[in-house]
Picture 1: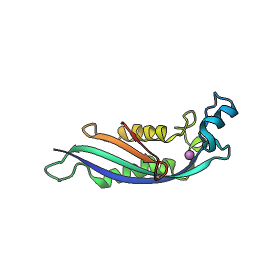
Picture 2: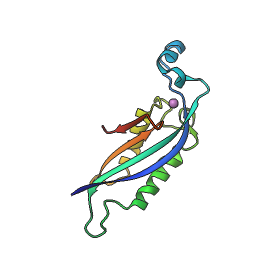
Picture 3: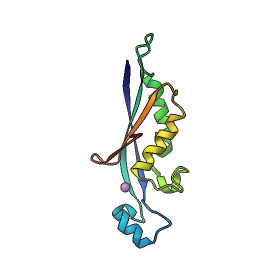
Picture 4: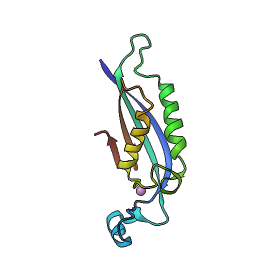
Length: 135
Ligand code: NI
């Protein structure tokens, strides 16, 4: 009996979408306002979904306190109030689109969560735009 549990996280961060291999003009054409050289910010909402069997002894899939600490320590501490392009190693050479941020978050958490569990990340960049990985 597989069950999914979810923990919500949140961080505020600035970014600029930019491909350094393209001209300034092409970057403006493709990324529009998101290419603004002075950066812009988002309030990112993060949903971490962990899927597994319910442990008969605890009645839990996973200890939510452990999961919340993991999200806090590994994701929120790392990205909250940061400029993703300038302040983080992860996006030094990776365009910080919602797609790429979602995948980076998955890769960080995947290493910290027991492989017996499936993991899926949903990241809201705005209330209307969100990404899921893996699809
Ligand atoms: Ni943006």
